[in-house]
Each structure stands twice: as C-alpha cells, then as structure tokens.
Amino acid sequence: MISRRNIRVKVMQTLYTLSSLETGTQVNKVAAAKILDDKLKQVMDLFTASVLYTIHIAQYADTDARMRASKYLTTADDLNADSRIAHNSFIAMLNGNASFAARVKNENIARLIDETYVKKVFQQLQKTTEYEQYVATPQHTPVADKAIMQFIWEKLVVENEDMQSHFTDDLPGWEDDSELIVMLMQNFFRGNSKVDFQKLLSGEKREYAHDLLRAVLDREEVCLELISPKLVNWDKERVAMIDMLLLRMGVCEFLYFPTIPTKVTINEYIDIAKQYSTPQSGQFVNGVLDNILKDLLKEDKIVKTDRPKN
Image 1: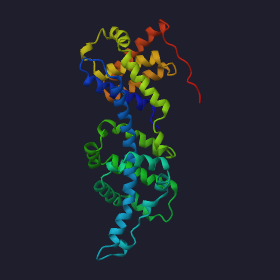
Image 2: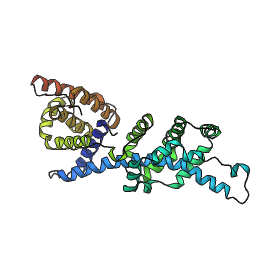
Image 3: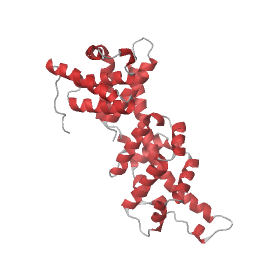
Image 4: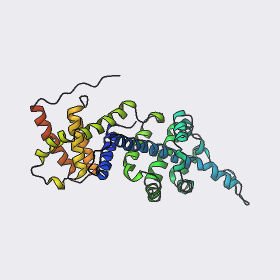
C-alpha cells in the first residue's frame, strides 16, 4: 500500500536527518538503515492509528448509549439511542481483518488513541446532518457504512483544528507525515479497504528503499561530479539542502536502478520538491535532472530494462 513515491520521501527525510547529524565522520550505514526503518515503521503506525481512531469514534456510540440509558432521569430518546454505527459492516470487516488486529496488538497502537478526543469528535458527529440521516435510515448498506466512516475521518478529524493540534502534539511524526497519511487514508477508503496491515510495505519496496539510501550515501562523489557543473548559474551554498538530496537521489535512480524509467524519476522528484522544498524547487530539480540526463544519454551511461513481472 505504501508507494515508491512514499518511499522516496522517507529516504529523503532520512538523508536530511543524516545531514543534520553528520559531524565530518563517515556515516554509519547501519545507523542510517535503522533511521530509515524507523521512519517507515512510523508511517505504518500512524496509518493504522488513523484507522483505529476512526473506529473508536464510531464505537463510542455504544458508550454514549449506555451512559444515556443509565441516567437517573431518562427520556425515550435516551432509552432508544441509536448505536448501530458502532457495529456497522465497515467496522465488522476491519474487526475481522486478522492483520489489522495483529498490528494493533503487536505495535500497541491503542496507546496513540486519546479517548477524550474520541468522545469530543463523536459528540460533534451527532450534530451533523450526515449522522442524522444515517441513524434515520432503517437499513444500512455497506456503501453507506463506509461513507459515514469516511465522513468521520475526512470532515471531523482531518478538517478539525483541535484534532490536528492534538495529532501534532501527541502522535510521533504526524507533523512530518500528515499529508502522506491523509493520502494513504484516501486510497484506503477509495479501494476495497481489505488491506493487509502486516504487509503495508512489501519486501520488494523495503529493498528498494534501502538500496536507494545506500546508493545515495555510497555514490555521493559520483553524483556531485554530475550535479556541480549544472549549478554554474546557482550559488551552490544557497541551493536548498532538500533540493541537493533529491538531485542525488534522482541521479542514483538514473544510473543504478535499471527498472525505473527516467521519466518517472524526473516526474517523481519534481513533485516531491514542490511539496517539501521551496516554491522554485520543482522547476530547479526538473532543469538540473533533465540536463544531467541528456549528458548521460549522450555518453550511453543510461541502461534501462523492463521490470520483471511477477
């Protein structure tokens, strides 16, 4: 489920971390790999926590119904509070997903859930037209069940300033990875949602991540020899660090990753530069990588092959 683009971002962030920690000595490759693994795991934990948060918000309907029914003075509405959302087909599907249960348990994802915020969001949910329409419907379809869960996530979590402040303060890595998690959740709801949470990152993609990291670290001199002549009209010291890291990553993909088309490489790093660096970075990365590619093609140094089909 985690894409190659997501991996490129994690490798870039790892390299940025290493650049800020470097003290002139050779980078410890084992430590670098550990940083990358931690960043990849962090993404998977945040994604799983996002799914679990959405479930907990819906399941609070059970708690709310019990509390209303136990009041000293109850009304008919209290005694007949609708808690069907807590047991809808979408939640049942996830609760039946062994990989989801295993990841939540093995990584103790529940530690990331604050029930105070769960209650607040559920109370906000109760006031929405979408929820009123949902509880007013006698029979819920799987489509409607997924739609209300997606509404909770997109409108009451992602667009909720209090929730976003809470995530930034209390969820490790949220500030760096929020856009990535939102994208993963969009794909999650857009697809059939039957995700293998134990294999959010395939072995092939993990290998690609570590191969790319090692290539950038091991081939720094080769990359800089190709990049530096293209910075004649730029003050090298003022080029954003992220831009330089993305250029090195792009050059490594040109030279050492034969199954990745050069067009894909350039387009991916343009998009990452636009998102994570300066407003001019996309154009800058595009121009430099394009010029380097032209030279490498003239020198017949680009060798690309089709990716093997499984």
